[in-house]
Length: 45
Image 1 (cartoon, one colour):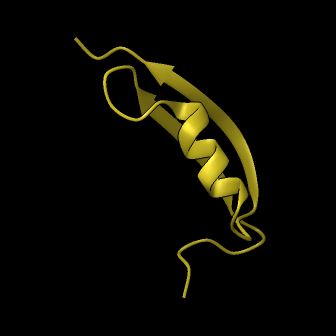
Image 2 (cartoon, rainbow, N blue to C red):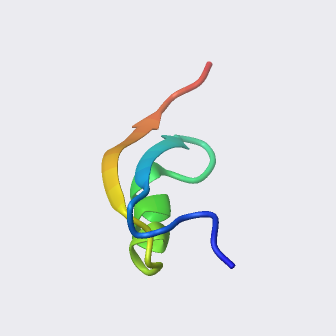
């Protein structure tokens, strides 16, 4: 079972010192998730 379906819209916010956005985006792209509408890596200080 997946929390995403093919009609999902996905927003990814990564952390500079944790898991960056492009790494999470690559993982989500391997699933049958819907469309990634925003992906970014931020620095939370």
